[in-house]
Length: 511
Image (cartoon, rainbow, N blue to C red):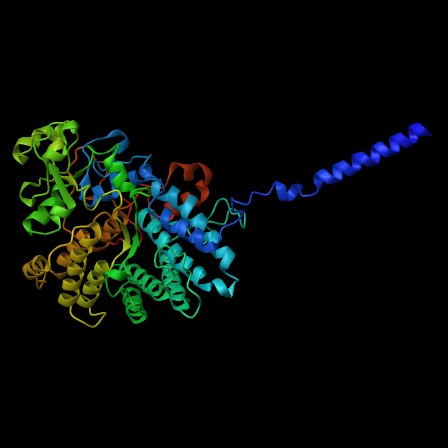
């Protein structure tokens, strides 16, 4: 009996101790610092930041292809840096836009849309995410052509892991609809989302952003569907596009959160990339006041170690762009005629202005909008004269240089504008060549508008090992990973669009 009593007391004590230890266990093991979820507005911010890449290596897609195709920045080196400089496929760099946008940016945007679509109090965040998603898809389809669109980003929500590739024509139709509907639906009466990284919750500016993107998208269709282009240009203007540089869509950087193109060129690629001759020559020939802001030359440098501050000069007179069509060996054959000591003696992007580590990056600007309106006015689609819009666009980009800590004096701006009147018979050339300059360092937009407009009138890259049958690269090929994981959908797109090569034109890039 005594043994049984002792056993019973021991059991009760054990249960009591076990229960006592369990009380508060969940609270004790709850991390009160790390969040278990994020507000949709913060996830939207992450998507916006990720748009300009997640690290310096991601910028290689821009550096090796976009900038080189439009002949603004080029490298003579091959291997991991080959691309638009040689007009060749580099399977390491062609997929970078695809992988970043599908795996990161769109994944985040789909999450925001899913969390906010049924919440009236978050309708502004919802519609801002729609605008940004349409912008991201615009870059993707401009780069690759037919892509997964309507079924994209639904791997988690609907278990669609092999999404269908949609025709670019259908994609653009829906992109324009999204810009129109989402911009109109933004409600200034709602409390602002002050954590918004672009505009601090200013709904009026988000509306202008949406309509400005819509104008850009509409102008893509000038060759392939001018009626739709005109219709949406008019809708964008009626809705309200950017009115000044204060409306620009900007990602600002700091000494901690760097401009990744600047980071890349200031570090591992400092001696590898140079301003291309067509770009430098255009700026020099027109006494463009942006040249000393864009360029620096380490005069007389015979090696990377001689690219020192003592040799640095931004004097327009000494700038020499690297000619297209050469590699690091054959470039030696044209050094003397260019008046340089070595390949390291050509002009580079200025790391003290446009590519400081804390320099901003622009998604779309007032200058670009005014230049697009200049073309729209030339086509008779909007009121106002092409010359007025043209002058406003050029002025806006000159004034934009202040954001790099390099303001251009008003007298200099006026003198340049006076020297660049819009000439009859040359309107499209002048407008889109200035758009090329105004889009410097925005490689995806410069590449797209060059294909759409045919300007500036660049000469074919003469590199002898070119894999391009036509004059220029027209698109980037799909990633090899898609051939492995989604070959059925990819093959359907190739059958509709054309071979998966650098020569195949996207739908709106009509001859």
